[in-house]
Length: 138
Image (cartoon, rainbow, N blue to C red; front, side, top):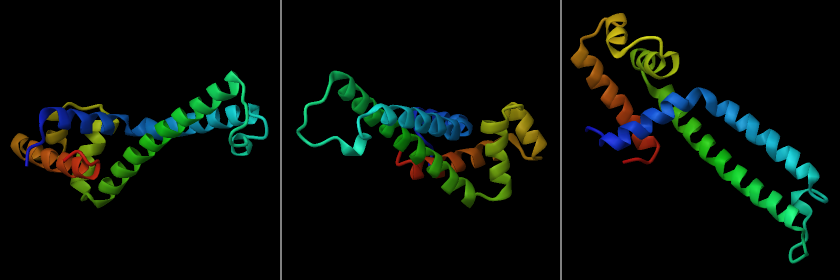
């Protein structure tokens, strides 16, 4: 089944971004730790219903934003890891060469892998379909 153009672009965008997900998660954790250290008693110890300063409110709001970003990054990283682990070696090479190494054009990839253009795009479409399903796109 062929993905809609916007769905394909979305999945490809996540695959291109895969290599920086770990970096994003590390940066979020660093920011999170820096902010929670500033809070009186840490984030878990703010009494419910207590009066807090505007600065504390801003910090807690920012922590919530960071948490959402981290959940999103973890979801897509895990989705990519899950599907990638199920691919055969040729399919893994296609993903690695096209989205992560990015040193070859599509033409260069299917020539390097010794496959026809038609076979390359057929396989790529099937691979992207798997990622889309795992990412809850379809």
